[in-house]
Length: 280
Image (cartoon, rainbow, N blue to C red; front, side, top):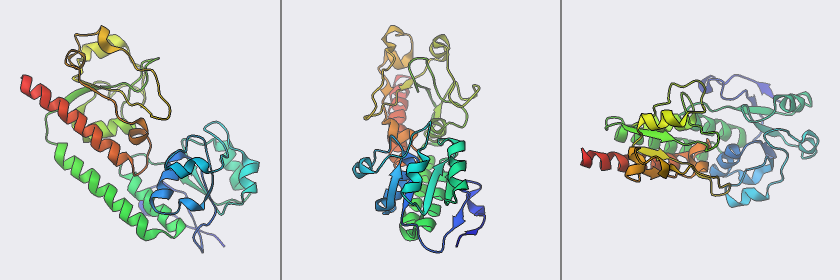
């Protein structure tokens, strides 16, 4: 029997149904949820997931039950899950409503801040019986973020351009995940206050902002074309070959591995910081 209750500490990260026993058959409807379940040692309980869930290696063998645009509701029902972990911003609302109408226990995940990752880990631990492992992972995340904040908060700012996409040229702003990481690393994003979290930008405005570092996230599993910046040698980052190409899966996916990606991003920003400090 399920007892509906509100988890105050998670501030609407999850709409939760408490279970009498830990979940044994889990549908995880996003790559980040799959990663988190494996990180707390319960990946073997996943019976279905969506496209692009590719980490760790064994996640590639999990049956697929949909993608960003559509969920295969009948297939999900046939797998008889006792827990469905849904991604609020990444799953079709109509399909999630259908799953609820069929009486499935659907738990919504919607991390909005870097600190939310640890909160979600703890909730996953409660649902799966892996409370201790989840707490350990959550503490590692919190401690890691605190260390980065301490290391870089008082350092000189580095002007960066975050090339999210080449065509149309897009970047990050406001509350986008990468923007939060840039702030943590002590970087200045000239487009931080642009409209929308992932705005398209004019190349002339990028040139005018004179970035000292150009960041081009690249996915190993899904390579993309990168803008050839050599045509604009007046940009300091281009003139002095200051580029960073972090693993897109590490910096864009809201899992525990994001800490690894942020550390590398901060290190790259710090290298640019030191380079220009020597030139001044």
